[in-house]
Image (cartoon, rainbow, N blue to C red):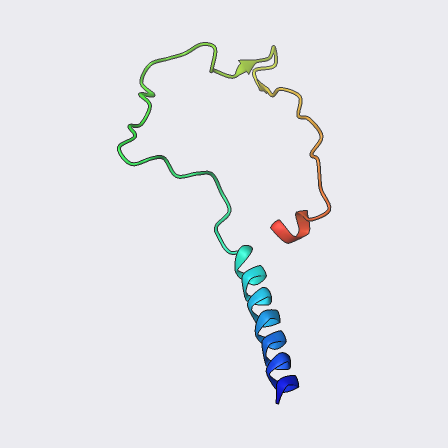
Amino acid sequence: MRSCELRLARVAAIGALVAALGLAGCGRKGGLDPPPGATAVDTSVSRPDLEPAIGPDGKVITPPQAPKRTTLIDWLLN
């Protein structure tokens, strides 16, 4: 009788661990939600430091992008 109870306890512990790890990946991908009561930024004001730079050919100059770093568990997060 004792070995049956021990086996049941092991199965329950493994089941709880699998459920916890399975639910740990749940959630949505994206940025954080703003806090309640937060107001939107007034976009009617022109800010030259935030406007994109225009090259001599009339196209927007994009800043150089840093190489994307990847980790071992990125496949799990995506």
